[in-house]
Amino acid sequence: MIVVLERGCSLKDKAAVVRFVEQAGGRLLVSELGDTSHIGLIDDRARSLADQIVAMPGVDRIDQHAPPYPQVSREHHGHDSLVGVRDVTIGGDDVVVIGGPCSVESAEQIDIVSRGVAQSGAKMLRGGAFKPRSSPYSFQGLGEEGLLLLAAAGRRTGLPIVTEVVAPEDVELVATHADMLQIGARNMQNFRLLSEVGSQPVPVLLKRGIASSIDELLLAAEYIASAGNSQVVLCERGIRTFETKTRNTLDLSAVPVLKAESHLPVIVDPSHAAGDRKLVPALAAAGIASGADGLLIEVHNDPDNALSDGPQSLTIESFAEAVNQVRAIASALGRRVAA
Ligand code: PEP
Ligand code: MN
Image 1 (cartoon, rainbow, N blue to C red):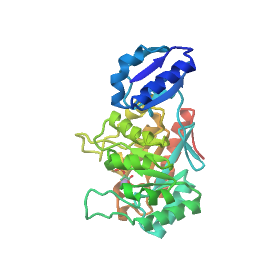
Image 2: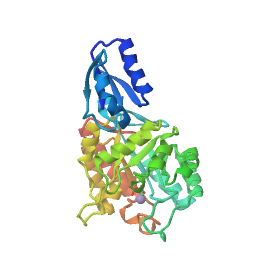
Image 3: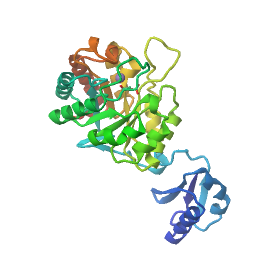
C-alpha cells in the first residue's frame, strides 16, 4: 500500500504522516518519484490506518494495489540499481559474465578453471564450497577448504568471487571470504537465511526457486532488502515444467518482467536451465538478447569427470566461444561484455 502525497506537500505535513504511521507501530519507506513523495506502508498492520491517513493534510490518495515488495519495486526507484562487487558493476551498460565450476574440487582444478575463465572474458569467478545436493550421497562440497581455495584463485586472477551459502550459521564465515553470496534455488524461500544475508553488507546473488513464481522471487529479494542489504542481483536459472528435454525450462520472459517490476539487476544462468552443455551457448545468447545484465556459466577443465554438474559444464574452450557469441549479441543491443 502506498500513500501518495500532493505535489508540493509541505515538509511539516509529510513529517506528520510519517510520525502517525510510526507511532501506530507501522513500518514505512519514503521515496521521491519525479516531483511527488511516496510513502510505502510496509507491514500489514499499517493497512488499518488507511482511512485516517487519507484524511490528513497533504495526502493526495492511497494506492491499495501497489506491489507487496516496496523496496525492490520500480514504483519507488525510477532508475536501475547498480550492484558493485569489488571493481565489477552489475546492472550498468556492461554485461558481466561470471564463470567457474559448479563445485571447487581441488587446488589444481580451481587454478586451471579460474585462469581459463579469466582469459576468456569472465569478470567474476564462481565455485561452490557448500553444495545443496538433491542426494545425501552426492559430493557435498569441500566446505571451508573449498572457500579458501576459491578465495586464493580469486586473488591470483584478480576476479571477485561468488559462492553459495546454505545455512544461516555459515553466513559470517562465507562472507569473510566471498565478494558475493549466492542463495541457491533450493533456498530461495529459506526466510531465516534471507534475513541473515540481508543483515550483512556483502552483495547477494539470489536465484529463482525451482518452482517459484516471479512474485515469490521478488518477495524473497524483499526479505533481503528489508533486513538492510539492498545489494541484490536476481538470477533466472530455469523452472520445473512438463518438459523433459532440458533439465529445467529457462523462463526468458522472466527477464523483461523482472526488469519492469524491479530496479534490481537481473542475470541468467543457462547452465542449470539446460542441464546439457550443448544447449548452454544458445541459452546464454538468448539470455543477453532478452535484456539480462549478465550470465552465470558453469565451466570445468574436465567436465566428464566433474564431481557435480559435469554434463552441463562447458570446457574452457567452449566457454571462450560462447562469450564471443554473447559479445556479438551484446553489441547489437548497444551493450558490451565487460572487458
Ligand atoms: C549452482 O549454482 O551450482 C546451483 C546449485 O544452482 P541452483 O541453486 O540454481 O540449482
Ligand atoms: Mn551446479
